[in-house]
Image 1 (cartoon, rainbow, N blue to C red):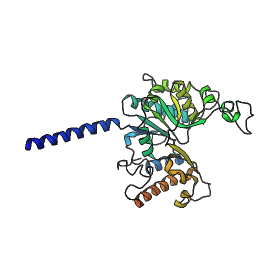
Image 2 (image 1 turned 120 degrees about the vertical axis):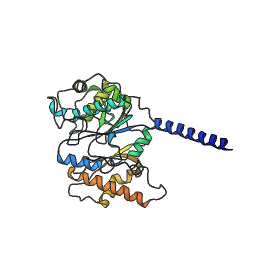
Image 3 (image 1 turned 90 degrees about the vertical axis):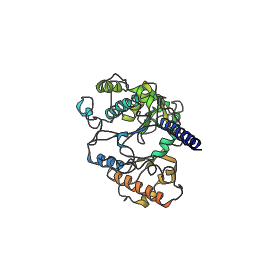
Image 4 (image 1 turned 45 degrees about the horizontal axis):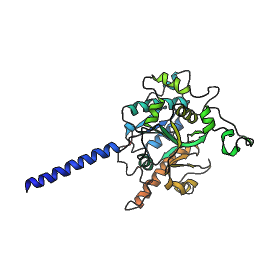
Length: 328
């Protein structure tokens, strides 16, 4: 009898261990990258993100480029004649260089690249992207910015004149014809895409030079369009967010005082169960308060629900592990 019981116990143990091992291997590794600057209002916005929706992201899974909390040497953008503290294109290149190193070391499957004005629901992002192959070179985002009027459907094959005030933004031919990334809600790079856009033998200076070679340098190129140019040039699929990962905006006027009720009366509130990223477009000095109020609303809604009745988005950080917030 004892031998039988022991055999059963060992079988349970080995099956459980095997299942755990399979689950560990199938769980994608997400890294969150933030681009910022050494400016008080931007630092406060970043710190608000770290203390709210990003507070459960393990510290080692956060990359910050620029500003006083920089983790990877974004100061190179001040040291080179090609860039400065406010050059977001340079900072993105630094972010991708470091993320590609992690991708090659198998410590990153997906990079979620963001600015300080993004409020993220992590759970739907991580759940949906678990169904995609991180080795496929692809970047997801809100696509369409930078496409020249002549190539847009509204131009009817370039037979209609440009609307008043329309300006085509120079970047690269692929973006002019197919459209680039609209960077407000951020974008998500696969491991395969990061490895494609950052050569393994390049120094950071060589990487910056190569990164910039894919855009037309006659004028300033917005960083989101530059990122799309780099993707297209390296055979990365530049694609809209997958179904279930929609983005939306939160907007309010400068004279509006933020509160729970004003947030709940914003247009985005009706869509919150169907989005993964909110691009916060209010006055910059009020964005930290938005992060804090939105986070408090999430926690309050979770408290009021029982039996897991909260929406998947509202469960996002509550169920993500109880990891101590990063200390900034």
